[in-house]
Amino acid sequence: MGFLPDEDSWIPSSASPEGIAVGASRTHTFYLIDGPSRNLQEVDRLFDEPVIALVPPRYLTETWTMMHLQPYDPERWPEVEKIVSQAFDSYLLNQRLWHWYGEWAYGAIPNVFLPEEYRWANFGRYGHILNEEDIVQTPWLAFMRSGDRKYFKFAEANTRQLMEVSTINWNDTWPEFVGLSRRHHETLWLGLGDYGHTMLDPFLEMYHVTGYTPAWEAAKRTAEAMKLQHSGDAGWRYLANPLAGLSRMYLETQDPSYRKEADRIWKDFCYPDKNTWWKIDHGDRAVMYYSQINPEAKEIWKEWALNLPHRFEGMDVMSALYLDTKDPKYAKAVADTFRAWGKDKRQEAAKTDPLRWQIGAYTQHVLTALRQMLYAGSTLEAARKMDEGK
Image 1: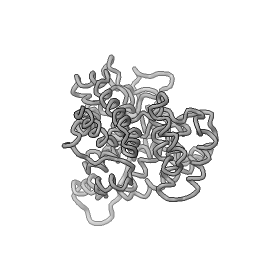
Image 2: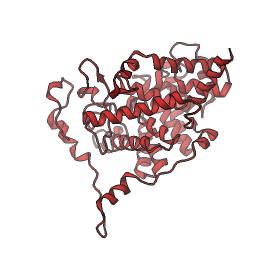
Image 3: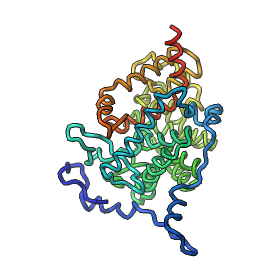
Image 4: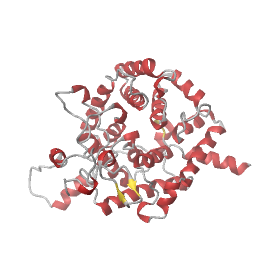
């Protein structure tokens, strides 16, 4: 494991060797075991295979505890399960092949694959993707709906590095940045945090699954930082992510302070169409969370979806509308998006390369699409039955 950047790839935004060395001491975990000596393999199993909690996926679906997350069901929607499983297998294979630098068990994954050079970018903002578009939540959802520890280990490693290396836990100069995650970069512990790249869902999922108290504390720190968003200047994701995070924390805790600040951001900077807060996946997640506590957002969601261009187009938001209304136009929209994923030129190129099966050039878009698919199974099934009935 090396700490120096690839000199052949240096660009002006790359970190210096000295800068990279700053974070080296924050990338290791040491266990001090008191008591009689134990076999090291036995000790390793205790930490590598921890006791974890898994609520039956069908119960999650029936109660909407995780909204409309669909349970693992390869018989009913085999194509979804194949894409999700093969995509994660591809990332795990590339970790071993390219010796990705990471925290603990390869916590971070690169952002961009360069087909012309046949390598993953390891410079500037392309070095690691971190949690843009809430992609670290994706493996947690995949685990919750299946119980497959392949997803759990992927989720745990990525959440640990996000929480303990790439999120600001202390800053005496800019205390307002405490709780915010850093923007993706080759050097995970450098750079200021910002609202556009900070999402708290992975911390909550880790706490619910493992009982790891620091994850709950991290979620609360992040939510407190989101309360300090008092500017609409940056627009879209810099509003959508605090709105989504504060809404979810209110749903988790019923603490009125979270709802108060979510309502303020909505009224001052979002409603009805200020600052393009609704853009792409950030807006999709924001409206799904916030509409649970404000019917006004739900009405805008229904009014805009399919009627205005590029607003609420994700498979997850369209599936939610279909399950709520049973309107076939939403099911068709989900099916069209899912088919487009399979026809995407980047995906077709990846299919010719066994080392990149089911993953394209941009990690954030792959993991975002996978998360959306985890909500879309029954809607895709309904769309297929509609097609068969014609």
